[in-house]
Amino acid sequence: MNLSILDISDNCFNGSIPVEIGTYLPRLVYLHMTGNGFKGSIPNSFGNMNLLQILDLSNNRLSGSISNLTMGCVSLGKLILSDNSFTGNIPNSLSYCNNLRELDVSHNNLSGKIPNWMRNMSSLQILDLSQNYISGSLPSNFCPLGIIEVHLSKNRLQGLLMDSFYNCLSLLVLDLGHNNLIGHIPNWIGEIPLGYVLLSHNHFEGEIPLQLCKLDNLHLIDLSHNNLSGHIPYCLRSRNDDWLAPISSVQPEQPVEFTTKNNFYFYQPRILRYFSGIDLSCNNLTGEIPPEIGNLSMIKVLNLSHNKLVGPIPPTFSNLKQIESLDLSYNNLDGKIPRLTQLYSLAVFSVAHNNLSGKAPERVAQFATFEQSSYEGNPFLCGPPLPKSCYNTSPSPPRTSTGEKEDNGFMDLGVFYVSFVVSYIMVLLGIAAILYINPYWRGRWFYFIEMSLTNCYYFVVDNTPLFPKFRVSHN
Image (cartoon, rainbow, N blue to C red; front, side, top):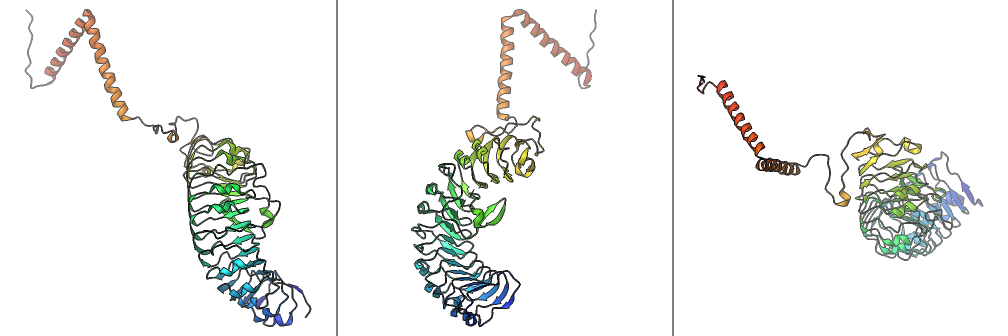
């Protein structure tokens, strides 16, 4: 009866949780049952555990409502119910859990809207409702006083951001990816101390706000798969070499999902301390890549693929010494590929489907592992691993970025005809001038014409039976 800590996590227990568990163990403070095979609903007797501070029922097969947990939640500080099959709405009775610091009900089948009373939970620091069926719009001014992490990805949220997180002065992680949010990314995003901005797979439009440049502790930016337009902000650059370096103060406690090396990964908090990246892929961004991005020496991932970027790859990219994944494919980039062979950490590299020209990077170090698919779709690139040799005569690449005519390797017929006519007239005029000036050559010319006509006449007469033949007699 006096047991305060019970940890039976990561075993092979199955069946239902005992109905009278709360009656037999009323003084439990910590209860960890994660990573088992428990199924069924949560017993009502959990409401008798008035001293319970941490409850972890994650990674089981539990179902039903979660309202039974809130009867005795006066002391509850951490509630983790992720990776189950719970259904129904978020119960209003959770609003009485005044000491709740972490609420994680991710990876369930919860539905309904985000309740407005959550903004009044002054102790709440971590809210994770991701991968459910939460719908509706975000509450206005939704910002519990001490909130640090908000994870709402992979739901059915819709509408505008408006002022939802305007006054969240402690917010470090904002994850709203994989929803149906629309409108512009608000400017207030630069007024809160965000380190992780994850807004991918929505319907945001307009330009990337310059206010993002104010975020000194920024580690991850994921704005991919939206309808963003305009230029990449040039001010996404380091004020010093510590930009995108490990944050020294507050660290996230929940894992963060980010696409790296063409795969989704959940990065645990201990890894996030040393990880940084920018993903602006699959938008409508235009203009040139700012060379200042090459100053982000600590960045691990840079994905600018599937946009409408033009111009050259900045030579400053040779400074990205820590980069592991660089994807610039499916743009309109031109010019030569700068010297990048000293990027020894690079594991994924693609510049496919652009207008790049010249020789592919030398196959040394990491670049010896990149195959033809990393360069395909650039008809003016040559050299291994591409089948096209750099020693063959080939047409020059198109010069679309300067507005000059495109040279596609074929003769312009209009220019050819004009040149031919002008040359022909010049030859005739030259012959006429010589005959007019020199009587001797004029006589030789007419004699040549007379003999040519006579020979042609007799040739026709001798070879055509329709013409009568005349004999010439010599007396």
